[in-house]
Length: 328
Ligand code: AMP
Ligand code: MG
Image (tube, rainbow, N blue to C red; front, side):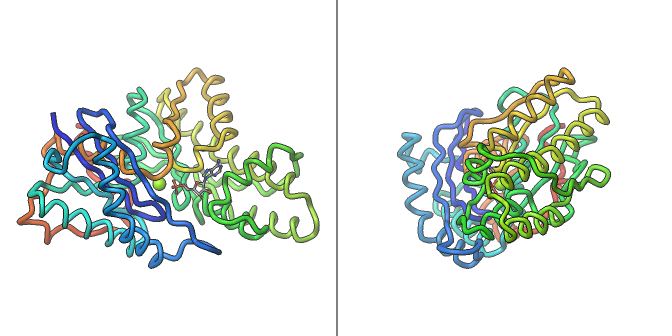
């Protein structure tokens, strides 16, 4: 049995989770919220620095363990906003050096996938719908391959950008979901190319319609119906091509009830199983980093303090660049 502390720091959230034997003992997080506009990377990094010690202490208290019980520290070194990643790495190295424990660098997207699997899926397709990332991923020949992805912005950033245009602050997704409940359908550009999706055409149209007086409720409803249908279509095609029969949802946008419903219906219709982790594991969180770090550590992936100089951030690392040695 090993106790792993996981640190999440790729974008807006600083989180510390603790796992033992695949069981999550604590999952504490603090999210940076810009006063207006979108995320400013340097400000978000400063937020992480300011809250890190408190979130760390709180997580230890919730898990009812002391610092000395930590045997491994995992942290998200990729992908993400460089200033945020650096702040997280500094904190992870500082704690690991003080406690003389090894570090495990974890890819954030893969952590969403691994925590999704913890719901019971064995060999799923992951629909990863977050702020900055939108990908359809699955493990094939030792790597998490990207079957489809956005060609422009992540779905969450797309929703947030439209929300900001209509005066809703970041994160806009939850408010758009509320507005959508009372809307009617308007046709919007449906853009799927092969397995890839794009949102820029829809964003332009939404802004134009809003500026010419179309009701926000109708636009919100139509945005969800159109954008989510694109994701579900690509995910369904990935299931068909790979002959797999499990779908896992991940990422902050997966909190959306309508997206969950559309995935559930698609899976029911083709006899596949649908898995959606609890909300605290869908949003960015430290528990998924601890959980994935534990899997990796168990297969011998670890870096000792004398080699910490070799550890770096990888802001643009792609999911399919990582050798998934722990799943062989
Ligand atoms: P992440 O990047 O995975 O932390 O997720 C953050 C993104 O999820 C932001 O773009 C939010 O607007 C979006 N989001 C959170 N809740 C919802 C929701 N209920 N519906 C749509 N998007 C959401
Ligand atoms: Mg994420």
